[in-house]
Image (cartoon, rainbow, N blue to C red; front, side):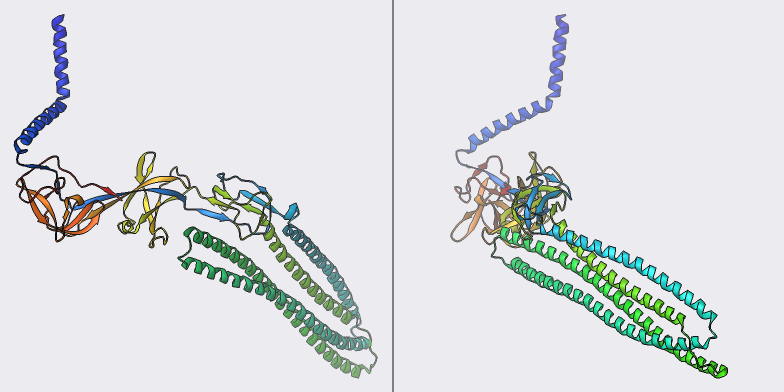
Length: 557
């Protein structure tokens, strides 16, 4: 039994030694190396100096660590479109909202009805009245036209029964002449009425155009202010941006008003063109009727004279057809003019109603997009106007990070430079979006903006950014070494390189200093090892021995 246990133990030890053979070998090698190192030190310490060396390098990395401020790419200031008093605040700061959510409601001062609502009610009543009047005009005109048509048909039947009566011919001639005179008078009155109606429509269009010109002038002034503000480098960046945002919003609002006015102008111009065309058609029809009446009178006179000559008849009779036709044509003209007038009044009432509806819609302020409410500047009972924002909404989809670096550091960074942001103790890639071409006039720092991957970020949150800059020598004999390896004298700059166990003085030229490293443009080769620790104490030709070699540090700025 004891032999079996001993055998098992031996087998286990053998397996353990086999599993850990690499670690045991490494430990033995390290022990041998330390022993040899101690022996070498003991043999050389009497006549050599201990130094550390570094292999010259073609490339050098620098890390820039900075705290960044997280911002949303979508930041919209919300302005009311009307002046009034806040009657309801339906959101809180930090609340997530969707597009169209009602944020605020506006009423009149001191809890009174807002004037926009009163104007809307008046406009609605005027529109309803104009619509009712238009419908009544259509109905009454139809009745009058039908009556005139019946009378005309009846008169024609009577005329057909007595068409051989000379008296009827005389009457027809007289009626035709009087009809021509009446149509002439109607034509004059119609032309005068049409001219007045068109002038009224023209005045409305002129007023709308004058309003548009005023808005265009106001927009031009705002654009001038915006251009001056954008070009003014003396302003504080935040104040400048706020001013630009305010002016941009005002320009947008003015553009909307101009667009609405242009639609009204187009509608009025269309109404004017339709009225002008309709009145011209009516006048042409009256002129045709007048010409026809005059021709009819002439023809009847010729027929009457011919018939009277044949029959020897000289008496005249009444012409009910002529009267019925005159009444029918007059009714048609009257109907057309009354419809045109009713349509014009209805169109103007509709335009005014749309304007008042647009103004009244501004009494509810809604979220323009999905996002988070970031700051409420208007409270319940406050008076607000279109020039001052009441809140700000920040989008939750796309975020950016901002850092500021000195000008020299900014020159070494491009949009392709590798960059990362720390999230949950890990660094993930972040792409450089923009690098400001100018430094801030006060801080003398350059702003760099990063596009962040979609993730869990919060606005105004601080996060650590890391930018990796790889400096590469463009020429064959240019290398990077630690700056503390270079001795800068009054007449020369030099380093000591390790050559056959001795320190050899080598004159060098410094092309640039990047962090704690020097960029050497001449004096070194790719095989050289430069003495770093001990460089200030050794002399040319002195025996040296080395400890573990150093590497070039990745410097942060």
